[in-house]
Image 1 (cartoon, rainbow, N blue to C red):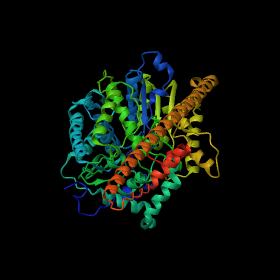
Image 2 (cartoon, rainbow, N blue to C red):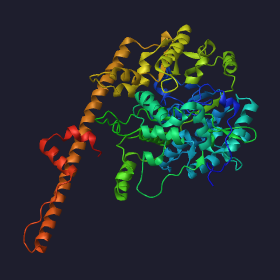
Image 3 (cartoon, rainbow, N blue to C red):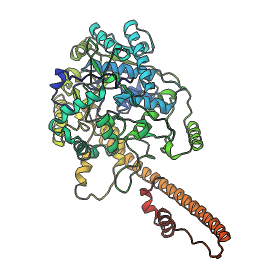
Image 4 (spheres, rainbow, N blue to C red):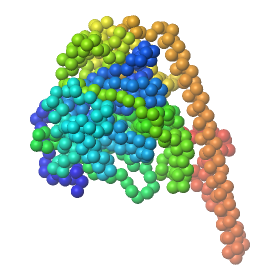
Length: 594
């Protein structure tokens, strides 16, 4: 029997969760709220001019998405060893960090990229898992416990727990032990429903309308690549990345999410589980709101995008996995739905993909991850005695209170401070988001730090390249403003600030890149037009041949000798013929799926 349906008893919400003022976002962080960042893009330039090991302190990151992307890009571009120092305000989040690090270290060139990508997305953002993913999680739990207790395994060469207290390490091991226990009975569906009741209160009976409101009035302007069915599926069923929704296949086998994702749960000493994470915002911002692959960002005539957040997440994470394994840059291609292809055609497509991106294991690139004690201030103040400083500090949206002089003084002179904004938190309105950003500015300016527009644009490059110079009608200006709202803000000391000439040069590069992207988009558009025209001509010629055969057969069978009437062309064929005749097919192509 599945873990989801094992528990037939009621779900009692613990008092500490009932008192949470933000019922939608939850009391415990289970994922972050901004796109994954490659920290190498914003590291100070002097790091690359000497043999210094880049040291990055991540405070309240909530997950390991930044580690995965940074190390994938490090293997391709720099080859430098990177040291991460992680601090979380909740020990349970460290358990998830260990799980993702174990997953990264197990990657090898024999893995199926698509399967490993879906496995990662499941572990990251689904409250329910497939049986094969659940099997991996139980196996990983054993290895993590072995590492914590005996210091052996793949994690031993990467993770440093020496800064943590013994009771903190014991608590983490106790939590992970429950991931593989057969004594855990937890009904995630009931727990999820109770959380929704708590969040919506009197509006629970109108939850369909509330979900519709949250998406269309809040989320769609912030992340237009997120599709409504994806968001609705998360709010109703606790599944953010559904394999069948992202890449459906024609075979009868469907992904069955039957087992609870125990890495998202909080366990007490008796093994009773609670889900205290996010039920409203979702993990979509982490991987699915931007993508460097312009071949899949296709805007349709109604203003929506052809592919949604799940497809973007698939392409992003798959490319990082490939780069992490091989050390080679991923070659982007168009998205292909298995549902639209025959088995033979899919075999050819996979063979072509393997030629573009061969799976060859690259040279090992060491990196280390040190876990902090919960008492961050105490630990950082000890760094003064050995004159230890970091190159970059990243602060999650829930860690803004740590933006204090005792921490900023431990950043190198030309180091960076990257702060996550509240852009993708739906509990807040625009004024509250801006108030949070202004508070970050106040704390940073008080310590003599300044905004850095150069690296701000570097981090938001995909967002800048997507901006179009279009006529703004009524209401569009406000939407554009919300879309352009930064997901991160960067501060530096005045000595490290880029010059105006460097900023102008970056603006010129962005402008030239936008022009190249538009030219490539137009070429791709013409290719799609040519393919469609060729397929329509072939279909109409085939239809004409079939009609001629039917006419000949009817002529032989008819005693009257009257020719059979020509069958009426279907609406799509007639429309296609008209379009081909008038040359206006380009105006209608965006309404037709390839």
